[in-house]
Amino acid sequence: MIMNKFTNYGFDQEILTAIDKLGYVQPTKVQEELFPVILSQQDAIVKSQTGSGKTAAFALPILQQLDWNIRTPQVLVLTPTRELALQIKDDMFHLGRYKRMNVQAVFGKMSFEGQRKQLAQRTHVVVGTPGRVLDHLIQHTLDVSEVAYLVIDEADEMFTMGFEEEMQKILERLPKQRQTILLSATLDERIETLCQQQMHQPAFIDVISKRNVFDVIEQQAYEAVGDKDQLLEDVLMKENPDSAIIFCNTQEMVNHVANEVIGYPEATRKLHGGMDQKDRIQVITDFKLGYFRYLVATDVAARGLDIEKVELVINYDVPSDVQTYVHRIGRTGRKDQQGKAITLVTPNEMGMLHKLESELAITLSMQPTITEGMRKTYEQAFVSKRSQNRTLVKEKSLAFKEDIMKLHINAGKKTKMRPGDVVGAITSIEGILATDIGVISIVDVSTFVEILNGKGQLVFDALQDLPIKGRIRRINKANVSQYEIDYYNQENK
Image (tube, rainbow, N blue to C red; front, side):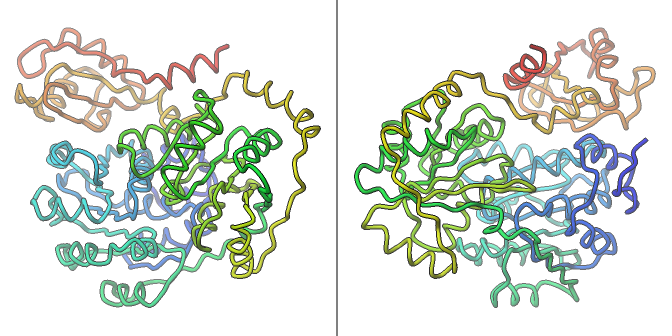
């Protein structure tokens, strides 16, 4: 029986089961305040920092109120970055799995046609960046006539990144009768004007974090009197972190640091805006899961990423402004953990560092030069850690493995397969109800269906000899990812 503080809000059993699987026990402050507001259909302005649990704060009460039978999106979530869109999409998908909610993410530099096909299927939630959402609206590939909930996440970043015009055009196309939730770390006049124009008597929730970023992150600096590349190697050897993000100001410097300075391909990956979007997504995913130690990145990685266990952030280049510095170091010290940030400073950059210190009213602890003797002291532990196998992080989807099995049917749109054909065949199996069938995704030559409530094997066995749309189809368990194989091997050594 599920017993946690989330039971106090009247959530359906399907949502409580997902919460339990994901290990949520106690609502955060922002969740406690926002749940009743959304459940009472009131607009809300939320001032809250990253890492406060804000995604679940709006996702859970919204998912509670959705109608599965409506085929077109009932929720639109706008985010400033592709990475954040994917993160929210995954979180909402997992929280809504037992309610069979289909969540799609749309953003640029990915196939528009592929997104169009996904949106043409039953879709309950769309999470996207303003530019690509507007593209779909203009092309009439996104139907927003049933949107009852609009979420604008990281509104301050929306304005900083220049999305004001796109947002206004999107808002003009949405139903006037809807609930609007805006979340932002800061509130300025532009955001206040937006709220006045788009909201009706919103509740204002201001969740002040008890953990000041400067209290939980130790901030240090080293002066690079000679070779900064050598200094970076020395710092990495001294600190010897399990995971670190090294920030550079340009793509060229990222390539230099990753390829020439660190030079351990098995331990290092690059992330910058010049990379293909699929490659960027893969790098971020692999870093979150623990496949490599060092992520060398431009500031594209400092926006909207929530990676729990980054031990160390290194500013290889001194950032040019306060906001960038705070975003960078905020990648460490997440949740209830302590973090560390180190800035490498040449004599020419010392003025920039002092300017940052002055504007933030802080003083970075200047560290002594790392000598040859110190290097030898650190080397043994550094080499030893390099030779150890990585410990992978448990990904959220693994929490559902016992209850949910994803099946692949060797037929799709080209054979005119429809969701009703799949549901009809599966519910004809004794002991299987429609509520045991999760999200169904039909592409050109394949259909994927999730079987819930631990009944996957029963359905898999029965479908081997059961016609679907008049024919016996080849049925397989959907491909197990390499990560799942790696994690299983790790746990069963």
